[in-house]
Amino acid sequence: MKPIYLDYIAASPLLPEARAAMQPYFSDNFGNPQSRHAFGVAPRQAIEQARAQVASLIGCLPREIIFTASGSEANNLAIQGLLAAYAKRGRHIVTTVIEHYSVAHPIKYLEQVGYEVTWLPVDAEGRVSVKAVSDAIRKDTVLVSIAHANNEVGTLQPLQEIAAVTEQAGVFLHTDAVATVGVIPFDCSTLSVDLAAFSAQSFHGPKGVGALYLRRGTRIHPLIAGGIQEEGRRAGTENVPGIIGMGVAADAAKAGMEREVPRLTALRDQLIGGLLAQVPFMRLTGASTPRLPHIASFAVEYLDGAALIKSLEQHGILAASGSSCSTDALKISPVLTAMGLPGNIAQGGIVFSLGLGTTASEIETVLSVFPACVAKIRQVSPLFAERLAETLTA
Image 1 (cartoon, one colour):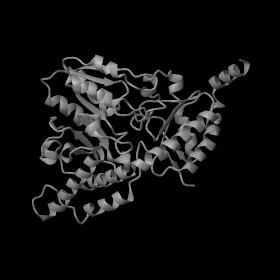
Image 2 (tube, helix red, strand yellow; image 1 turned 180 degrees about the vertical axis):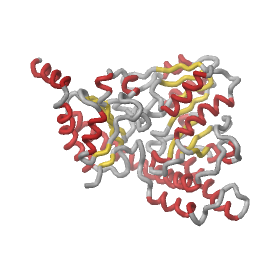
Image 3 (cartoon, helix red, strand yellow; image 1 turned 135 degrees about the vertical axis):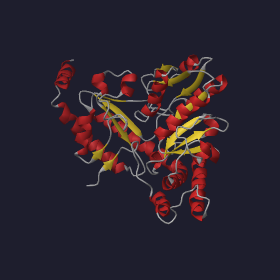
Image 4 (cartoon, one colour; image 1 turned 90 degrees about the vertical axis):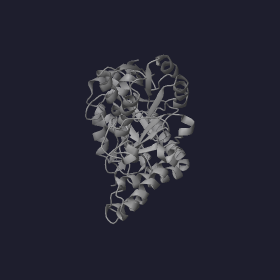
């Protein structure tokens, strides 16, 4: 039986056309793009073509794209690189309590070395208030960093409205767009962000390559120094095959988005509606709208999310119990607790993320299997037995 893969937010399978485009740069065109002889020409030209393809995906200039090794590196480069470049402007940062670790950890480090940080709360749907962002900005604020969408609960932030606030205040705005670029439209010309990090693996490109959008005129100091690559903004020999694969995947994502967004939205809603109708004491996490089209996330009461993941895997269904970067580190999702869910409910978090390979028949299989998996785990839960007894006597 073929596994039903519903963890696309963690990794997506590489597109065949991306793999084919990458292959020659492992062998025939192996040259260093910085070499001035003939073997450097093809890799150098291929990188610039990929840069144009990635820029086209988000509506920016090719020179505004910096290739990195991951979305996490891009986030670190954006935050630490910008603050180093504008150290004289101030030492205050505004962010939220539900940012990805690749944003939260460098900001916590900066807090330890003397920066002041305002950690904004989110509401029960995981959304930050635009007014709270505006109220938090001070004269010495240099950076506001807020993810475009949370990759665990799928809630989209009001980024355009936040950008209007930061632009008026003269403050830089960085967004972690790993969960959105290549999945939904992301246009730098309308969002007006200054820096945006994203990753190829989010839209069926290769692992080990990401990018940072750096708005023209915005400065950063490199995190990796010692070379002229990426106009001196990120040293180190380029991952030529990975960059090429990212470019091809960017083209495919742009071409297929108009078709995929409504298709994934319909499958997502089928999954959400079907599960909530069948399983008692279960709630949707995150906003119902605006929400990423490929994320269905829940908190299932009276069980442990990790146990549910294992039970589903026995039926060939592969999902996640939270962010792929935190599932081994924390049993209870910090995102769900920040949204106000008590620990005994947040521990039952489960995330299904859909992609190009997801079909309606796969969703139907999940709907047929999931209730029995939940019921089996709850059979050994004394808390559930007590709750069920209360319900029957009410």
